[in-house]
Length: 464
Image (cartoon, rainbow, N blue to C red):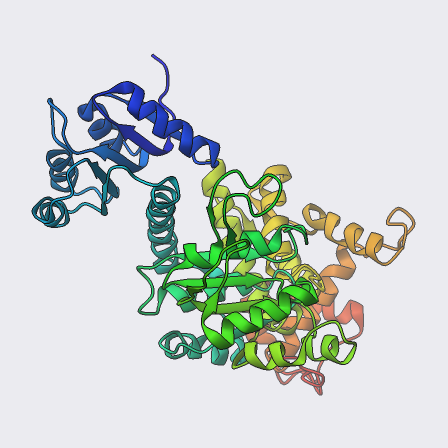
């Protein structure tokens, strides 16, 4: 029995040729689609999770489009259903809305209108999935760091505002996660969240990508195309890597933000822009302004609500908890036993600078799950971190001096003693070591205290 693929859209019409024509239109726009002439097949696809959106004719002999909508809703299924009919009657449209249809289109349907509503429906499906993930335990949006906690505590309140937000921070610190939180905690949560990587779109295409274009506006413009500003609707437009935007587009974006309107390439009239803008960058935009690479007026227009994410090396108390959560996640995905970090490996993780921040940490833990042979992760399972750092620093990892396990143990004991204020009893509990063993190790390293249970001056230099 062949396995049925998951499609973005299942098109259903009792005339198969009509369904296939719409399928071809969708696929030409990069939307995966399946054509069927039996509404019960479309119903089965929705129930089995094989269709993200249903596009259905209304008048069909086996089951009408309205009946299909009701059956999907009766199964408590959230798959959006777009209905198409040749009869533009208000009563039919109201019946469709009452039944739970996502939208009601009247023939002849313009290609651009059909594509617009399909994209909106697909974006809503993606938004619901993102919202479900956000409502779960998102480890990147939790912190033990006071500075990070203050920033995160502001997000629910800032989400209710409409001002433009500028999220800054190094790559891998979670800027898009913050942008999604601002969206899904706002009154726009049911509207689209549209991410745009400004640095990934070729300069000659970015205006068309953002603003859309009219048929014949330039060579290759075979049909009208809605831009991402239109797709965002009343939702949120997330402009990632905004510092990469060319100066000419900066001027056009500034006008959009000031006037609330834009003009598609080749169009004769302007359209309204209603989305909230959240921008992000790993660059110092103030410095970019001084160097003449970023418009000062756009910088101030974007920087209405600034949010800065500190790098992971400045929130060391988050490193081990994040690492363990990533280990838990990747272990479950791999179907194996959950891996645990040894004390020495935790110490090693805390000392690593993490230039790639949370993204680097997540990838490192995925690699550990793939290659570590033991359930307990030891320092030698993390040697690739030092090797990678050496390559970044131009050093040869094969000729570097590597600390022995005895040295790693000594460092860790010293760290625990500093954390406990030099109290050997509490240190023994943390280390899982009996007092005599700790005494011998301290005697060997020449770090014995005065016998009072504390190490004199051992708390000096304690790091938060």
